[in-house]
Length: 574
Image (cartoon, rainbow, N blue to C red):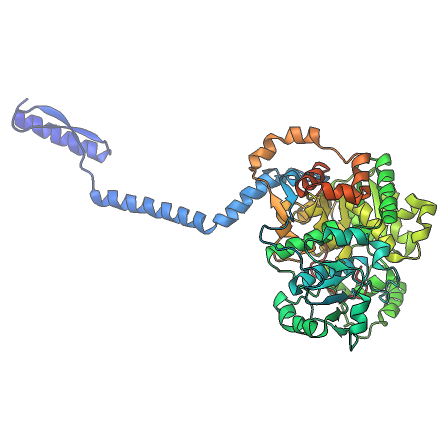
């Protein structure tokens, strides 16, 4: 075959291979007729178009990830946090104790630049405080009073408790709190005296000036409006002192709040003794127990404006009670329940707990006053949890000296609820908030606050679904309302979320999962002696302990809404 014919043959082969999209063809060099392999020519326009297309896809993907980075990070965190195997089948969390609580601890030590208290003589005057409301509302007032005295460089006189509120309790500060401990514990922060010296009172030309400051006032208000009066009159009384200081203060003042609330305000020995006896009696029956704080008194229900299923009788009775308050607006019970403003009924509390996974043999301590409807109202809760106890059942005759005093009874309930493994509440009152904050500070003990807004719809539709579906939906509703450390929200009510006083140890989520088996083995409940020491230790021993050892001991013990908006003007606030 000649060279020309060979080249024609190769040209035909080239065309044939091109039609079949082959990558290599053979062609003949015209000079010597040699047959060599050659790569097909490529269209650079096509290559550039393909590259631009690929770059566009990459740009779209990276832009989507960047714009949703926070969302993806939250999903990853929640996946690890709640131990989800997949999104559709989340693994159950430990309903008794957070796996992450051991990585958080209360921290309220004074900073290096926090100056010592001004002594009584050189101070700017004497500050008298008249608190308002029930025990726990007054507790918030006392806490803020110490901080205000610090702001004003004033000498604080031991606060006066409210004897005229709905609760009708004539107990004085010294009847409920250990005055000596209160004064000595805070000696480095604020100078506190039991009363204004007699020589000061007799030298005054006028009686102490009395005023009421606006709610949630900033420190600047006290310096600009209150301090000049204090300097001029020397003795000043602030009345109805509850929620009169802003929730947002600088870190040192917030830590002072924590030192007052969680350390200085210690109950008297008789209250501590009986409260601790009830804790020990619960633990002798069962190592772990739940404390349920039920606010379901007739007055409280009437004030809420909600309907609880009692028919015309309930509407009439609560309506008559509601007439006691002239300024209450007309409310729609259905709207209030839809908005999550109604306290859960005892039955609803029981259903929520069973749906979360607490079994029928779980022990309950129920802290409550008079329950509207009496035993009939409590019966569904008793059926769900037969191991049902109250302070009246546990204390018997030992409770008699405290019966005339609602605040002292509330203090006993406070101790048992604080010491419980799980604390649950059906309301948004002061005790619920105060204890939620304390339990966070003391190591994030499990504290369940009902997501009332979402749960209300579930309770209304409960008969339309089987138990497994109801339980799954309740667990979904309650994520974020179980007292986990991540739920602390700076800027919210400080008494419930004391974020400035909670510190975190460095850790990775992998540290938790890798030590899960070890944690399950080592997890334990406070022993009888440890529980006893918490409230019965004397002042001298506690004073000798360093704050670091105090925190470590509390964490070793495993320490650690409710309806969203709380109305501090509610005269029934506990």
